Amino acid sequence: MPQSFNDQVIEEFRANNGRVGGPFAGARLILLTTTGRRSGRPHTTPVGYLPDGGERILVIASAGGAPRHPAWYHNLLAEPEVQVEDGVFVFRARAQELTGAERDEAFARAAEADPGWAEYQAKTDRVIPVVALVEVAAGPPVINSPSFADGLKVVHDGFRRELATIRAEIAAAGPELGAQLRMNCLTVCQGLRNHHQGEDQGLFPYLGTQHPELRAVMDRLEREHESIAELVEALRKLVAERDAEPTALLAEFDRLTRELERHLTYEEEQLIPVLAAAGG
Image (tube, rainbow, N blue to C red; front, side):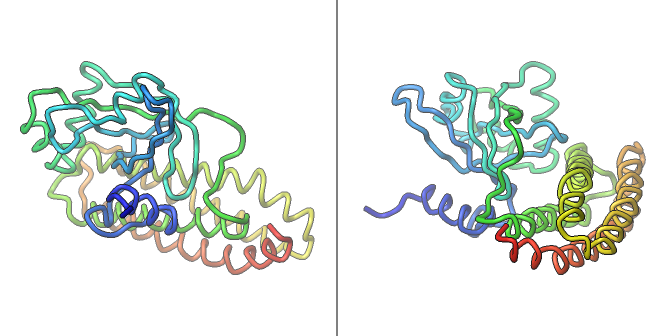
């Protein structure tokens, strides 16, 4: 039996750590696995998402403006606990439908960033739902990789991909920064902060204990974390300014990206061979 379109996208997504071609090329995409409200079986669907800070992401049940809500939306109403794959991590989340002013504000943000959402709403009489997916804490994050060495590269490439997407959004912005673009910037800033804190508290102390010869490497990486944290904070403050201009933001964003890329490349050169040799 030939593969369905969704099955093809799912296979490509999993094989390429979240990168797909065709109509979803360059889009922010997750695989959302819900429990069928009638069958009780898991159902996985590729769904576009919006960053919404460090604690949750948003999905919109547009169904392309169809007259009925998509099946995945009905499933998560019946069973709010879902699985999310973002190409880097696999995690459990709890679905929370937004209502009232919170829903309207989130949908307006989405439509400002991509008018296609407003076009979908105009095609249907139903109010298109917006759902927050809030990660359920369940131990260390599960990285979509066969080894820790490979996982480090997968995480780094996830940041590279998101930074490239945001840069394109800033470059295409008009004279003002949209609310969703600001949120995208703030979310990746929080993600970088969390990632580096995790390395400082876990990976680096572990490697420093197991490999004393890497002390100089660890010292350099920790210093670079401090420098990058300063750049992240400068970017965060700029994004928070009401009259922030895209040209100023782009310059600050490029400064951060250059420093981060140097850091990531050095970290990969120094640590991946050590992790791979240890079978990690």
